[in-house]
Structure formats: C-alpha cells, structure tokens
Length: 420
Image (cartoon, rainbow, N blue to C red; front, side, top):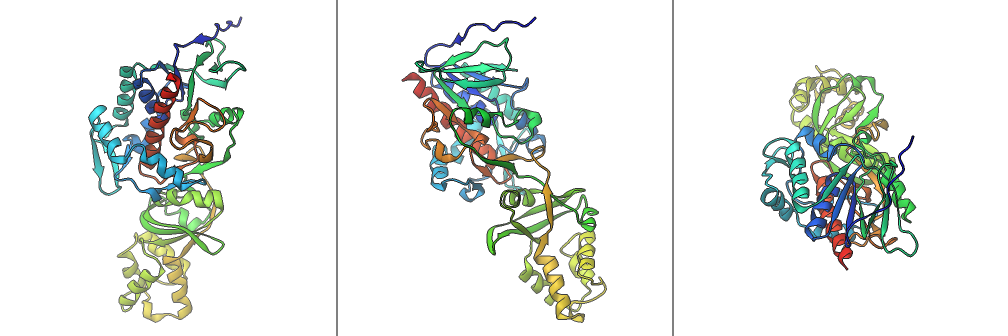
C-alpha cells in the first residue's frame, strides 16, 4: 500500500532551495543561508559531496596554485567567463578556506595544486557541511528531485521529489547545482539537464571531458604502468587547437595522466588529432639531442630521456636498432625516428567514457544565464551553477575553482532575489 504524499510544504517566505550537494551546491547553500533566508539543500543520494571525497586520489585538490584564464574552456563567450571569475578572486577563495572554514592548504610544487594540509578530502567535505549547518542550512539526503515547476499565478517554485513520501517544497528561488554526468555512481547521472530543458533551457551536446583515451596499438599497450612527460598538441583541418606539456601514463587500455586528460576534450568533442612529443620534447628538440649525440648509440641516447621500454618500442617502430648511431642511417630513417619521437600521431580509437571522466563537457550554454548573477535568462528566480554549465577546466583544481566561484555567486544572488 503506497503512502500518500503530504500537502505542499511551504517554506518560510524568502526561501531558497539548492538542488545537489556537491561542491557547487554546498557553497551555494552556505552563501544563500548567510544572506539570512531559509535555505534547504537537497541531495538525491544518501551521501553528501561524494565527488569531493574521491577527488585528488582521496586528497582533494581544492584549487590550482594560481588562477589561469587559459586553463578554462567554453563553447560560449570567454568574456562571460572572465566576468564570473572576477566575482570571487582565487586569493580570496583560498583565504576563505583557510580562514573561515579552517582548512589550511599547501601547494604541491610538482603538480601546481593546492591540497588540504591534512591530505584528506574528508577534511574539505566536512568543513563545507559544517559551514552549511552553522549558517542554518537544512540538509536533506535521499531527496531526489523529479521536477521543478512554476504553476501559473504562483510567483514561486514547486520542487517535486521522486519519492511519493516526500512532500513537494514551495520556495521563492531555486539553485540548480546538479552536476554533469561524469562518475554517475556518485549521483551525477545527467538528470539536471532534463530538468533544465523542462524549464526552457537548451543544452549543448554533452561529452566526457578530462577522460583517458583508448587505442589498439599492441606494442604501446604492453607499456602499461610507464609514466613519461610529454609535449602534446591537438590538430584539426591543419590548425593547432592547443598545446601543453605534462606527464602521461600508459595503461592497459590506452593513455591517461594529466597531459592526456587535458587534451582529451579536443579529441572527444572535435575529433582532433593528438600529436605527442615523448620526453616533453618536440621534433626539433629531439633533432638537437640526436645531433649532439650522433656518435653514441641510439639506445644509450634515448634512455637518457625516456624510460627504457618506451625507448626500445619507439626504435622498433622506426625499424632501427638500439646499437645504431644517429650518424649511421639514411635521411628517411632519421625522419621516421624524429616523427616517432617528437611528432607521434596517437591512433585514438575512443575514450573511457563518463564512468571515469573527471567532468562533463557541454551542458547549459553560458549565454542562457546572466553573468552578474547566474540567474536563468529563461526563468526568473532560477539559478544555475557548477558543472551543469558549459565550462571545463584543466586537471588540477580548476574545476573545483569553477564550482566554488559559481556556487557562491548563484547562492548569494538567489537569496537576495528571494528577499525582494
């Protein structure tokens, strides 16, 4: 026998409902409540901030070491991005974590990321939850939202739960912080896009971003576990889309690591070609290395810059012996070797998908929100923040930076609108 739902639960006047208790949602709820309006934070799963807990290998890379505008990508206006990031500068966010939340951070020089001194992601998640409770946020877990509607003649939102036992909520403003579709086991299953479309928004095609890439090259697959710095570039129609240099990791299915994750959105979304310079050197740099070492064997020379197994694999691909010297072979052989070392076209066959992607690309176009408030241009008193919006950052805390900035802006502005 089913339980009949209670009547609509009317919150106090000037109230805000935040949907999604991830990074952006937690911050949105904190700042909405600090404006003095009753705030309810709804989470569809039983756990809060699951993605925070698994980020950074369980350590949580809270922020990048510094703000870099070029570390972010959107299919919309970069001017909108700039305006949003100016609302809460990187230095102020770090001060907020360390001063107000009591989470001291330390810079990991090698990666350029800021981690909690405790080395535990739980420290970050718990501090955010505690800040919510201190501000007076009512947190409800296991409260999956089915839909949000604004009945005719009612200047408020009605938030409906999937479970019939949960009474619908009535609120002045709603903040949609439902995340994307990456790592769906954490609760980010893409349902937020459906809700946004039902409220009049469009969505750009979504795709797994910051995702490992697959290939079917048997000789490279045997290198699983080998890590190497690479310089990379993505190309389409003869044009270079982006370049970078970071470590890559060989896996049993293809390639991963920071460099590959950073490059992946060009490959997955645009079908771009990925070219690699092993050892972090391009073709010209490798030419200089080999010329200055022309009297030595190739095996010795390459192993000074590359892991032994990778060096041998690349020589085999170029049909060369590790006992040869650079001065001993033909021009054609030199071209093959230099292209293999410094301009290697990775034969990508696919990607690992949303199950392991760090974030979701695409989503709600930035042009459909007001950059000064993140209020929807389609619906009054609806605000959007975090991964649901069309913005991704490079690996290394940049996507958390986006979550913190947009969460604060949406939460603050929603509460202010609710009071008017």
